[in-house]
Length: 486
Image 1 (cartoon, rainbow, N blue to C red):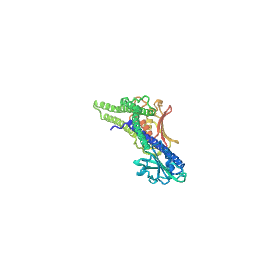
Image 2: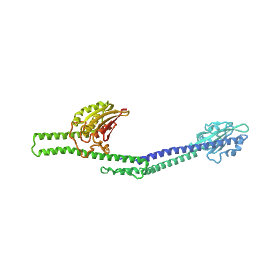
Image 3: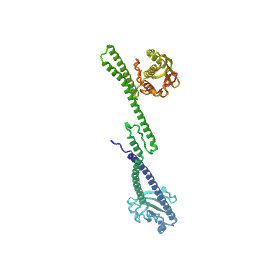
Image 4: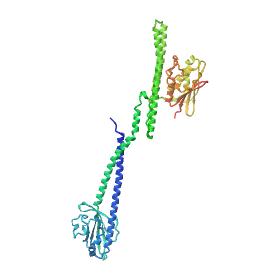
């Protein structure tokens, strides 16, 4: 099943983010406008009520209210939303202006209307200051939202009149509703536009990734030297391209190494097989004596042993490279183990007319079998290349951070250009690839298969350590470095 488009997913995310921003900004603007309109309307009502009360206080009596009605209603003239109603000291309506619709009671428009028919508002005393806190809200005729103030006014003769100043808020809510609708339309259009532009921009931004994929598709088994080359790659993708090219380089190196390993393995396995085939063909060319047949079988058995050691070594290297390879770590005395290994090789050393000497002592934490195998491979190699009458020294020493095991032998020095490559599989300093016959070594020894030093390096890597070689006119030294256990 094809996965969803990254560009579409990012565009949707961008659109959702834009929608959230529009909602927040639109809500803020709407609430800010509503608050500003409400504050302005409240101020208009308060100022109108104050002005009307001040004018009423200049009148002499209730009759003066009716005589000067135009003067009082001038306070709300010019604004159709504002209404005024004035009641005389007896509570009867004396003046009304634009009051229709502001009151919900049926008799609000009749001359017999009284204070009792007004909404339940807080009545501001004649001596109290009119403030926005005195405003009240109610529903007028037809469901119209009304806001107003009900206050008393002291006439000059000492009587008290009452004034109602109200405002119909329908136009304000209609204005806010239209403003909200425009915000919603602008928000939807903005989100759609943001998603469309975001999709196009994201596709353009992801083009280098498509170029990288197209370049990577050119890499095949026959073209492992191909590298990903993308012009003007963004800085954020430079690390990705570098990592992919480094990976391809490692893959190429590993493939070449595997190819060389396969070729070397085929070459080394072909030699004993050719020897057995040639010997068998010669033996079958004419009748042979029993001794000759026995000699042929012994020679073939020797070649089979060599093949078995080679196969066992290859299998060990394959297992050792597996991430789940198990090591049995334990602490032991390296000097004592070197002495045991030297005793085991005593007969082989005597046959080669070389001496093996052990020195030093150190406690090391390692897999005992792998330790023995590594040292045995080095010792077998040293016996092979030490001239008759020479000496091999096995030494163990400890420092603050590591334990070092050294196998030193006399003989021809190894050229400097070969010191690192001798640990490669099937690599030999001798270009003739000469092989010695089996010497009866233990299973840990590889004879002359060309894998002994490669196994040593693998064993040291399994322990987190290292191996290196030093060679000069005096001797050749192989040093195993085991890190201290933390």
